[in-house]
Image (cartoon, helix red, strand yellow):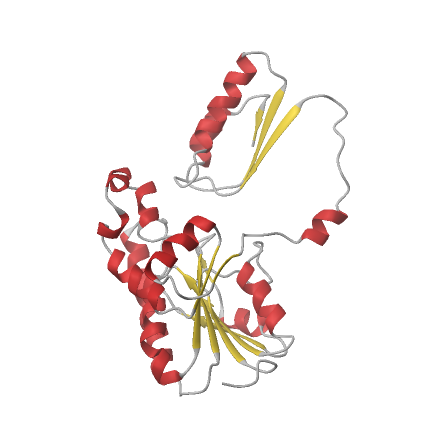
Length: 279
C-alpha cells in the first residue's frame, strides 16, 4: 500500500449524482475532497435512479477533473423502484462491475469505499480483496433486506437474520475492514455481522456554509410552519403528517405544512392540498 499521503482510492456508488445534476451527494463530495490529495476513481451507473434517464459517455468525461476520474457502468434501467425491471437492471450493472474487477491487477487500488446497497457489488469487492490487496470500507446507506418490509409489511414479523438474503448481507458486512453508516441503527446492524472493525456514523448532511449564508426569512406572523423536503414514496409516511396537519387546522390551530419533493405518492398526497397544506 502506498503512503497515506498519496493513495489510489476507488469509490463505488451506483446511485451517485454528478455535478451537472440537481441532487447533492455524499459520494461526489467525498470524491472531490479526496482528489485534492489522492488519485480517485468514482464508479457509478449510466442510469440515473432519481429521474429514470440515462447518462451519456461524455457526462463522465465532463465530470472527470484533475486527479478525479469518473467511470460509468451500463445497466438496463427501470421505470419503477419496486419492480422486476430494477432487479434485472442491477444484475446488468453487477455483471459489468464484475468484468471490471476481473481485469484489475494487484496494487491498482489502495482503498475501496463502497456504497451498500448493492449487496452483490460488496460481495464481489470482498471476494477480490485478497487478490487485489486493497482495504474495503463499506458505507451503509440502507439496510437490505430489512428495508424491504416497507413494501412488504409482513416481513416486519420475521427476525431480520431469517429474512431472504440476510446471509448474503452478513457476508458482505463481514468483508469490510471498516464500516460507515448514515445512522446508528444501520451501523449497529452491520456491526452485528462484523463487530471487531472500526465503525463510524456519518449522517447525511448539507453544505452548512451555504445554509449559514442564506438570509433568514421572517414571515411576520405567529403561524407555525412545517417543511418536508424529500421523496414522496412508501418509505416515508407523509400521508399521516398531512392528516395530522388537517386535524390541527380543523381544531383552529394556526399551522401550515409545505411539502417539497416528488415521487410515486405525489398525486395521491395532493388530495390533502388546501390553504394550510401546500405542494
